[in-house]
Length: 353
Image 1 (cartoon, rainbow, N blue to C red):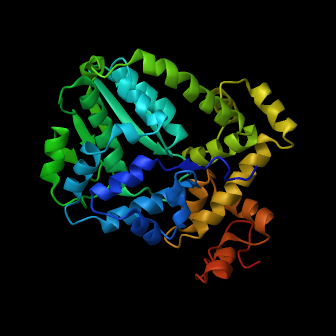
Image 2 (image 1 turned 135 degrees about the vertical axis):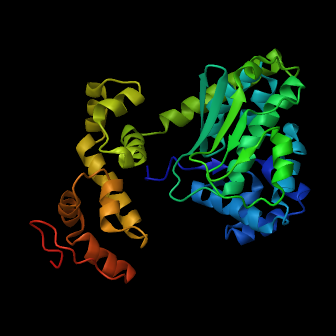
Image 3 (image 1 turned 45 degrees about the vertical axis):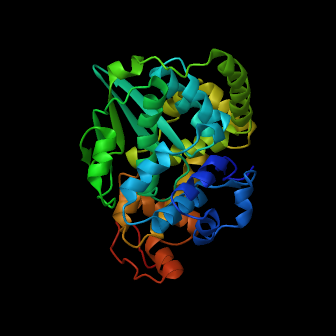
């Protein structure tokens, strides 16, 4: 199993069909994304990076009034063309049940995860894109949050407003008024997170589209698909991914990761041993891979890279990097990118060697 075997996404046929509603050719999108036309067959899989390239291409090909295009994309999409993982939430018992289902089944077709938190009178939904090595295209975030609200409105038959909407990015949308009218609230750009906040009472809205018989058919098949996907994961592969995700918050702890995986530390260590590795080795491998990625970004200085890898001292990062690559981070960057080496003196280490 390769390091990227979990990063596979099937683009739903409904997605390609929806591009035509925006006056965009699917073939043109694929060419602009520099991907093979075979992905239009509906059976091919793409990586998260390729999925981002598709949506970046769509963003470039859309008209200047992107906000209107986004609303049109969502409201005119045909649920009947959606894959079962996206169709099931439309027939849930209520909005809360629908959001729970889409958060669970989204991983079968899409690279993002939903974090749904109910607190007091509010419910917040935040996005996390798995296996993303670069920032996700803004249009993908706008569409995802808008479609979550659309889901509740279609299912309940009520056009209720969101409480608030926040985006990390500056506004590239054109007519923001159209977007605010759609959400029924103000839209904040340049926020600290991508977040949709709802009135918690709206989660209790019964779905007029509720179909228990259809769910009885869809649920077992979707659960089996999820189980099959989970069984395809190796423990070491999953642990390395969690480590990479957690590095910039400090050094990942094996106990915390074991808890996140729903097992004891001893069980986790035993499974890693069965796969001929260890937590210490996976931490080192994850740091090495991320170090090379960060050093390829000339805007990051060495101290920042060390911090992002969870090292408290830059000298500790230098020692680790030399053990991986046989050179200092500064010289590695100079040799591989042609960037001027950093010759800062590090206690006990000579960057020139």
